[in-house]
Length: 111
Length: 296
Image (tube, rainbow over all chains, first blue to last red; front, side):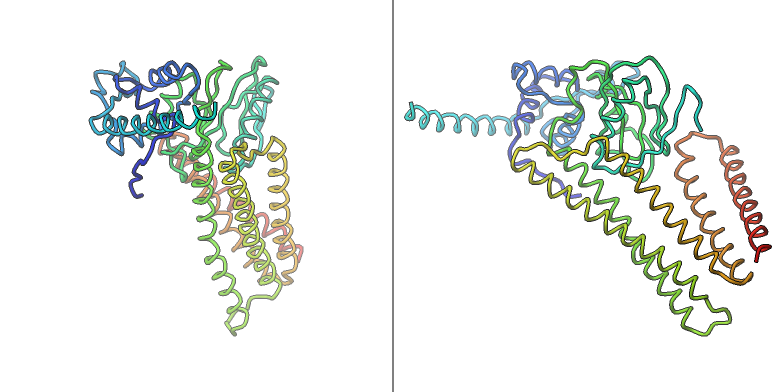
């Protein structure tokens, strides 16, 4: 299967990457996304699993020392954003900011 | 196959029916029947009625060819468990989860992901069915040439017609399945584009699928019965019986091969069951042949 390169981020993806600026496991990411977006964005565990696999495949996140982070007897994985991920997130942030600025200029004229 | 605390139901389903399956499991749990196994017959166990939430999902990492739960699937299950979804059972890459908390988010919250998973798995299943078409067609052609050519033994016309009907029927069935799946895919794609809800079948689709399955089995049985009865002499009848015996034997062994690894059985149990099935099928066919050939 060819490697699928990420062009832009969907809204849930953006919030997940924001959350991973701190090392987190699955449930922590889900809680963090909900907290950052004030409950507006909800990511289910299955969607998160697929998303994390895609991020890892694209080198945007990397697993943290799994054995040390996971409690005994669990398969919990902890991830953190990589350098490439930070760059990608910043590009996305700039793109969204430009969209907001452009939109703001037009919307203010409408008032 | 049922006692008062356990019931087993025949519930055939397609990848497009997962929402209907979820609805069905929720209905059953509110009546006190909780799904415990969906491999083969769907098994329910009796307990106190309560309202539970079910999610039936396609695991992107799981195999479509067996029921094995590998390391990646275990990671997925663990992530769902942490979010409040408990894994119940699976068949191939279809996994059933239950949650007591009504407020936990669905396992898959991305509409595109849901549609893509159904499309990918559905296409693979259809591809396998389409791979059967040349084999079936070739088989039919071979029989046709055997009928036309003057072999030492010539196939009777009735046998050829019966066999041909079964093969044509299966090819038509594959076409019908493909058309139905394509129609769902088109509707789903258009729903994604327009932001409308993804097309979901309600629980009545399961009843329709069951009825269709019974009709298919009934029709095939009817064709086979007509085919066997139309064989007028004992020799032809014996040949039909032997062919039938090998078909059932191959189906039984294939079934065991797919079923046994999921049961975590010991080697001696597997050998015993295989031998038992083979002897059982053989005895059944001998009885069948003796009984019917005596009638001719």
